[in-house]
Amino acid sequence: MRLGILSGVLIMALAAPAFAADPVEGVWQTRPDDNGNFGHVQVAPCGAQICGTLITSFNSEGKQIESPNVGRQIVWAMTPEGNGSYGGGKIWAPDRDKVYNSRMQLSGDVLTVKGCVLGGLACRGSEWVRAR
Image 1: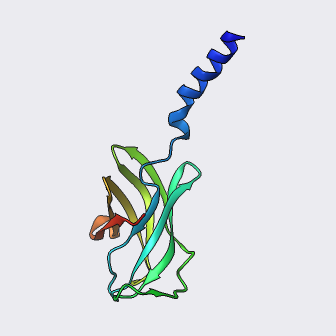
Image 2 (image 1 turned 180 degrees about the horizontal axis):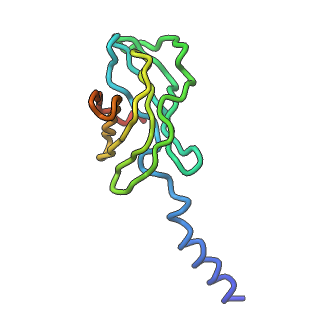
Image 3 (image 1 turned 90 degrees about the horizontal axis):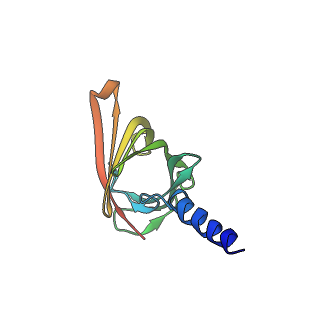
């Protein structure tokens, strides 16, 4: 009986890292776009990858606004690469209606998001801060 309990505890201890949340998970506040609007993006797993969905939009004065983009996935297919790096994903910029090949780098409560087109010749990036 003791061996069974001890085995169960050991299995749970070894499996805990597999069940732990990725540090990038949570709600991130974007920087203002070309129109001065910003949003909150919920970053969460989507299968083995990381995705982000716009959950709230704000105008340049910080007031919540209606947007047809709320509920839309704007980050997808990000693969954790270790040390806070994520790559191989895509990001959609609503203000320009463009999809970029994307990378992310997490450092504490700052998520640096970078997207490129044309094989990396034209890139755009910003820093998002953890919202909650």
